[in-house]
Image (cartoon, rainbow, N blue to C red; front, side):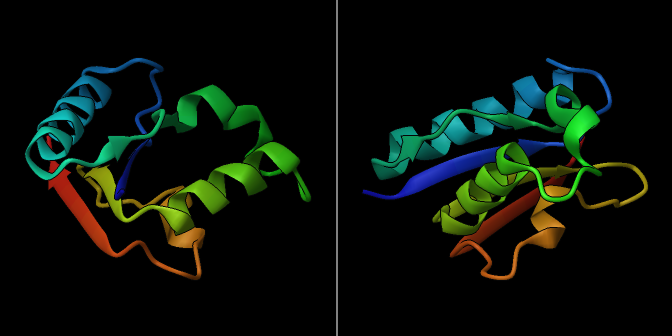
Length: 98
């Protein structure tokens, strides 16, 4: 079964951006029979982002890399977050502006 991962980089945890991205994931999953994995909210792990090595960040990177579909809302500046660090890209990536 396909997996969908939502990756949100909004500085506020549990933002409206996250809610929209999770709704997109839910609708895609409903239509395609995929499983939505727990959302990765970068605001929740901000304190660990620049610690190397960090097991939690490594695990999140692996989840992004192994996803069949990655939903990553783009910020107004077009910045990329954890998804930019992944060497093996997900099969499908949906980036949208909110």
